[in-house]
Amino acid sequence: MNSLHNHVDRLFAGYPATRRNREMKEEIISNLEAKVADLMAGGMDYEQAVRTATSSFTRIDGLIDEQPLIYVNRYRLEWMQKSLFLAIMLWIFTIPLRLIERTPLSFFLLGFVLVLGLLYLVLHFAWRGRALEVTAPRHLAAARRRSRIVWLLWGLFILITLLAITALRFGSNIWYGYQVKIGGPYQFAQLGIQYAKPFLTIWIPLAFQLSASLMTKHEVGDWEA
Image (cartoon, rainbow, N blue to C red; front, side):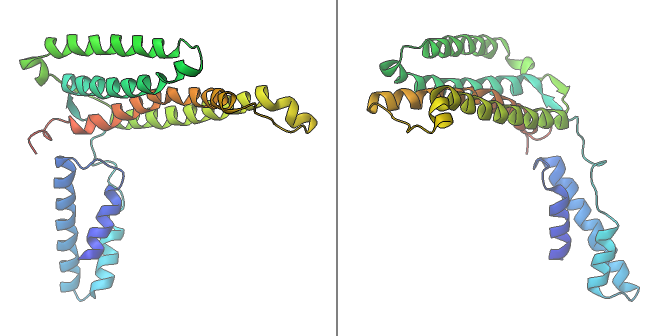
């Protein structure tokens, strides 16, 4: 019955591997196997029976709950924790930049880390006991859609920013066909920093991606799996 398993695997591709979805997947496979057995009992050969059974079941959109109940405070705490970790990594990355360029960027990120960390600690101690059992529906499809849109916008931002930096730094050289010259290692490092700075905004799309992925982890019923 590998053909049936492969068909069902394709149907569930892109959906989270929650306990509810795993149970639904097993139930669909069982139903398809039963249908194939019935068709073969009626005189149909195996290959044709598999094709007939799978062609009658090609979508599961209506079966998947796109607004699952989740433990919202557990979800929020883990989102803040992981977002804080990402912010700390970005801040550490900016520390060496101060040796080459005077920039408030590192201090700005440090302030952001401190605010986010303080907020996380406050909520971590505030949300205890029953607060961690609070549930609410969340629109999973909308969260994934937002994540994709933010990644697309971020990619466009990076592309436009890098083109703008290149135009400002080397526009006249490119326009008049002059050779691009970099004075030395220090100037090369400064140029590299200018190109690297826009990528520090990667925290934004990663935070949106985390928001979507953590919803399935904190779905009600999957914590006991």
